[in-house]
Length: 436
Image 1 (cartoon, one colour):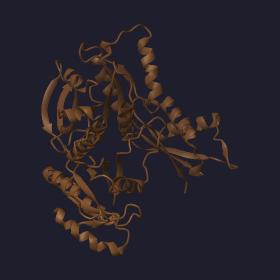
Image 2 (tube, one colour):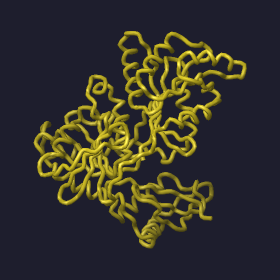
Image 3 (tube, rainbow, N blue to C red):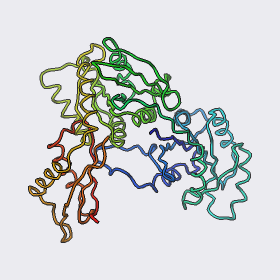
Image 4 (spheres, one colour):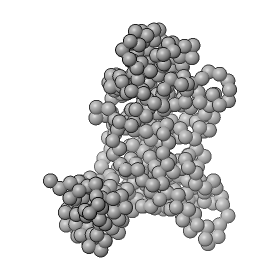
């Protein structure tokens, strides 16, 4: 299900980042941080009353013409464009300022739901000052204190009311949904055009779930596919092409609706931090992943070039050690025929269920070969393991004390499961639980 997007917007120094950290920090992470995944703190996932949503922190909007401030304003406007709901943060200690009114004019033009928050209202005596903010024209202002966490519940209650309805385009279970993600200029558009070219029957372009997302349905070798693209990914313009870190905003909605994600790299430019950041979102979302190195025709090669590039990928993307790698050229169509068999295979692995008896045999052998180390005089005991989910495959390991399951041993068990069963291309989750 596609998560709603909430943007936190306001002029500089009103406490936007503090509010962002408060909202995100209260959430218990579903998946543990994995070494190698680069996080960008301007974008994260939060939850309120059982509803998950994506949240964006933005730079302060300043209407001056200084280049740096102009870039911040442009980035904030991108976030506004991507958002379903906007939280407009103001400063209760300073009252309504000219800069607040300028920000309000930008938000009027967005036509998006806006919830007005007055920050730094740290005690009840200050609440009378909140009424001045009605003049901004966004209805009731919500007094909050980011530093003390006051009033955020009422604020998020109001934000949740404006989430869009959860409409989903339904496809048959045997249809494979996939998307291509990556930095600007890695060649996603040319790769899409090459993949949707000759020898494929394009069925239709269907309006998707949110804000004019486009789903391209087609078939190849008897398999039905849906390639998921978003309105944001199709947009042209200098701001979208030059503001790299906001490419994740346009990729996230496609990731959430996909079974398989193709992480596209540019062979000419090599691996950048942004590549790891974008791939990390697909990994955290639990999607099957293929790493596609595009523009392979454009570099000078010898018999060692591909091996060296593969080793660099494995070193830089340690958290994607399960993902197959394919080297292609959208321009020359080199190895494009390898992509669809890989999509089919990793999609099948993403949905794979294994028998509990076979699974427990594998875990028992692994523990016999490498018992868990002692921790403060106690040793981890594993009683039983069972698969509880697919897409991605998830395994609950019933143990005596879950806190004794060190990350390194959890990784060891994951590797043994991967050796025994075909899980190439898909993340898997190992979840320790106390046996009751």
